[in-house]
Length: 561
RNA sequence: CGGGGCGUGGCGCAGCCUGGUAGCGCGCUUGCUUUGGGAGCAAGAAGUCGGCGGUUCAAAUCCGCCCGCCCCGACCA
Image (cartoon, helix red, strand yellow):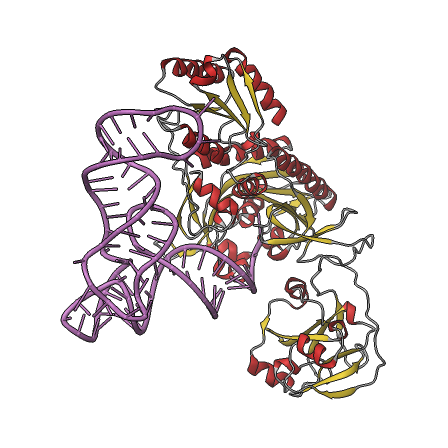
């Protein structure tokens, strides 16, 4: 490709609306343009990257025997009602009516459709196992699109679904996907982790996420040197007990001190000796959630236990506890109570449910009854539950996930098969997703430098950037054209910058675009009989004779793989 | 959905407080020069100042409503 014919509008300055590195660079390098919140146009260079990523995914999916198909984006609401998700998902799903007034939705995922298909076509255990996949656009009316292409309302996604006769076979497919995903992310040149994850609305039993470490990520994971790795949504840890005082209920006047910080410094005690009480409302009434004063509540863990909930409003807090938020506690309350395990067996200070007062000497399990479960948020430095080493916490971009769905969808949609004994059974399913745009953004986040993007060879828009410094100089032009033709013949993907612009601009654009190798053809070095090859990553440079350039490039490309 | 910020040629911004002929840098066009790290000179094109309404002799500027975009939080297969 010649730069004079390629549409790649580069920008000298960062776009005002961009915050994340990948967002800034992808816009500046002319890869994408934003149409509206969470909607992006992929320009030629961006689309080339996306296609390469998709090709790698397709290659690896095919390699584990998955079969690609294409499914409608527009779907009848009826099928989503059958699994119950039409009602549970809410505003995140785009909904519309067709001309006949029928309720339709725009697909945000395809469990319903694929299971519908399986329910009609799979009859016998002889038809199984099957693994079907699609690489298609999904639509979600995100509450908050952000960070460029990292969270958008429309995005392509590879989704695969496995259908098996039993848990063992599902286990096999799950494992195959794990291996396949690892190969995909390795081939894409990413640093990544596999962590335990919360199955969430997928409603499955086991789930893992593939995460690319990056400060631009939205998720956090807890990691241990022993290999323990989990999304903070469900990560667990061990924490030490403080030295507890004597038990024995005693009311304390704590006028105008409400927060944990205020109370602990007012009383001269450490926050770990307090109980933090949070009142939330569920469909079944109020629930008091409690963690130690120095800890934070992990909402997703609580949600697992009590279902959908929201923080109580001030007047609700008053009604339930008789006090304002700063003075509430478990003692004497007759509502559902959920306490973090770290509270079991200690002696604490907490709100007295009386304005201006706290109560000390509170023994959980004795002075109040509660369900003791893990509902606190893991923090760096706490101990691993597997090996007791200190945990680290890292910010990550979710680039893929795998779920064991079980029979959640097959039962709802009647996807069954007859086993060897002629008995009807629900198909055991798994669901596996990868976001190509997130792979691209994660690569930019992880590998860019102050000059621009540094693409891995496997997903670079072009492998070689051929900078022709003096396109009007007959000798330079001839040498460049010859090299260009040789590269094409050798199967090298090359972008030849033949624009009549200053060398400085050419170099800056080359570094911004981030192709792995740059070849410079200029009159100065040509007179001395050489060309320069620069490796984008690290920017090491070497001189080669024009005749040896293609071989040198091929060698370097292999080296960089 | 709650909180905050922003909206002025293609891009990045100033001007708004204190109302009075719309400005800067980059980019773009033409010409000449330059040609190994974002060139110089000259001449030019390009803006309903997000929208609607109000106040005023006069609104980019003041007031109200709305829309859009970004950030934090909630949410998130």
